[in-house]
Length: 120
Length: 112
Image 1 (tube, each protein chain N blue to C red):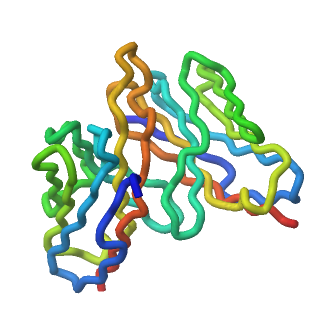
Image 2 (cartoon, each protein chain N blue to C red):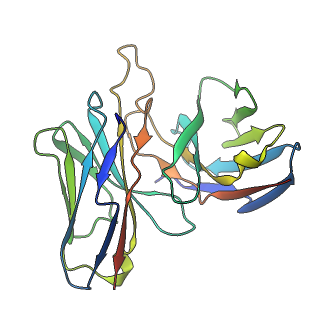
C-alpha cells in the first residue's frame, strides 16, 4: 500500500496518560499535515511540516500537544496528560511539492485512515 | 483567518436526481477549493477541486462551480446513485498557506 499510513488505528487511554501516534506519508510527498476530526465536524488543522521543519501550528495545538518529523519522513504526534476533550479522530495527510510553474501547493493532498483516540 | 460555511448539513435525494451542496468562504485570498467525500469510518477522499482562475470544472457526474466575487462555491452531483451516499466536505486554502480550512460537512443520502 503506497498511501498514507497511520498507527495505531484505535487507541483507548485513561485520562492523564500520554499517547503517541505515528504517520508515514507517501514517500515522494515532502509536506505532512495533522488534523483532528470530531464526530459530525470537518477536519481541523493542527500542524504542518515541510520536510523536517514544522512551519505552522494551530492555536488548537495546546502545550500538551507536540509533533515531530525528525528526518523529514514519518511524523509523530504526542498528547501529554490526555483529557476527555482530546477524544477524536486524528488524521494525517501528505502532499506533493508545488509544480515549478507555481501550480497548486495542495495538489495530491492525501489523507490517512486516522487514529481514533478515546480518553476514558 | 479563513472561515468556511457549508449548507445544508443534511440532504436527501431520490436516486437519479441531482444534489447540490454550497459553501461560502470569508478570505478573498483563498484560491484553492477541494471537495472531499468521507464514507463512514473511512478517510476523506478528494473527489474534485478547483482553483480560483477557473469558474467551473467537471468530472463525469460531478462538477464544481466557483463565484469569486460572491465568495462561494458549489458541488453538483448529477444522476445520483446509492454509492454517492456519504458525508461531503468543502475546503479552502491560500497558495503558500498550505493548510485546508474545512466546512462542517453535508450528509448526503440517496434514496432508492
